[in-house]
Length: 148
Image (cartoon, rainbow, N blue to C red; front, side):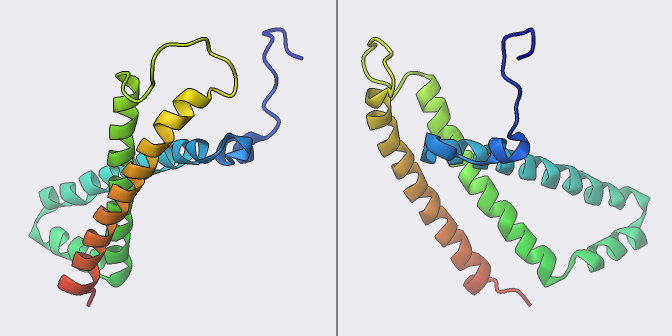
């Protein structure tokens, strides 16, 4: 064991991604991290594509022609999915951090059932709202403005 008293992470990326025995909250945590990174990558690409406007109209038109394909259109929908989950789950996390849905203070004894009983219904509600937002966005994406 290292001198610091911490165990060495032997699971690596698999341990970071898998929820293991932690339940749905761990998967939500991991998905929140991944969607945050995906939104950041999209933001950086968005700035890069937008900055091509500074190189002239011909460069801008060339870049926009390359991006006018079904692959990029479906990619935009994936960004929408990531944003919907990340924003609504972030709202849930903010409410929890502000002390809502925690219950009265008690002696913390594992498995912390009081907070799980209060927070899991909020998680389910937020995921239902996220599903509704995704369905509405999917309708707009696939039916109102279909991919060419």
